[in-house]
Image (cartoon, rainbow, N blue to C red; front, side, top):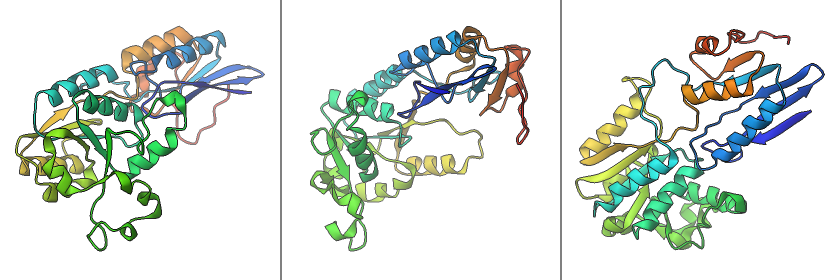
Length: 297
């Protein structure tokens, strides 16, 4: 029997699993964290996993590193620090985050609302929200009904923002439509979601110098990250101030170690990690998993 148990992660509907076999239980963590707004779900998973007395645990290890060089915050800290940036400026504030991270969307939505600003999102984000809002447990605003939300439309085809210029699924939100002219004229009243592939919109928006950009995603893995370099070129050109504020969707080494010690598996199979050898310091029966190899428990 496979028993799914919800966990807290940076996207909705994330689960860990307990696989009940004739030899005993096998626990799989999935991707999880304990510093998000639904950390109680991860705690519930930890308790049920411990009660199953697992013979093996398949564990993620995204942040299992010797020394963590990146600064990571809790979701509450991201909201607090973002609110400080927005409340201290009369300029537009651009934000970017992973598209499916609804906790981060909710964070920036709250920041905009707390500062009497509108949050401007893409049709793609509006479409996702329109589907997820049906799940009342997620506590998400309806993009069609919420007065804080506006939807940004780029020029396409005719360049005159006609309904026929857009895909059918995009047309649903045209009653909430704003464009570059609106954003330019209302900079002090807006928090705008601007992902990497929308940077060309800055040419038309013509925001004031010393505006702000909150990058709420992981920092680059290396100094040779081309996308990161291009992003900073855009920001320098338009004289936009950069802020790095991110809450990871994964446990750090200390918390993951505590989780493993709490569950007490007899064996560990680390996956989704660049440092599987560090698991040996937690449990001497940790395996260095090899791709394509079959393991018998």
